[in-house]
Amino acid sequence: MRAELEEGERLLWHGRPDPKAAAFHNARIVFIGAVIAIFALWWMLAAADYGIPDFSQSMKIRIIESVAFLVLMVGLGLCYTPRIAYRRALGTLYALTDRRCLIIHTTGNKAVQSYREEDIGEIEWMIGPKKTDHVAFASPEATVRKGVSTIRRAGFYNIADGKAVEQMLREVFHKPYTGGS
Image (cartoon, rainbow, N blue to C red; front, side, top):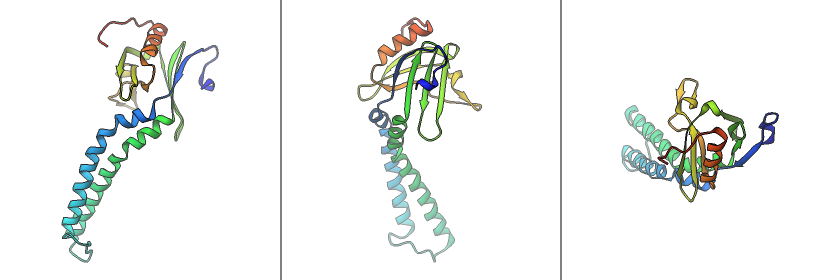
């Protein structure tokens, strides 16, 4: 963490997202994935006449079974999203300094997102899952990467002390509370 700080920059707060809360936040997707996977299994069995697939049959049957298999893989992939969110949260660090907000991803290729005062938009505190909080702070324009705008605003998600972090952000970046959160 200290290696990311600029000369003279002071670390005011640091934390990391709660991995269980991040996984719980994605739990609804498991239901959708399970429904898709069950449908795909039924589709594959129906295409195989509820037996072992006979690949000596027509090409049409093999294509149907192949598409059903791909749909099954999508469903199983959706079922795996809470695990991905859990692992991603384990490799994420948040920091607030006297100059900027940092989001550091340490899993895979290390990535550091830095948000200075001009990148900070409306600061919003939200109650998250499993007794955690979210503090969103970047304007949607600040989250544009390679010409693609992301839906989710940058912020500190699934943290334990969100209200205190929101107050520190307001003090550092001189953003008074305007109501609404």
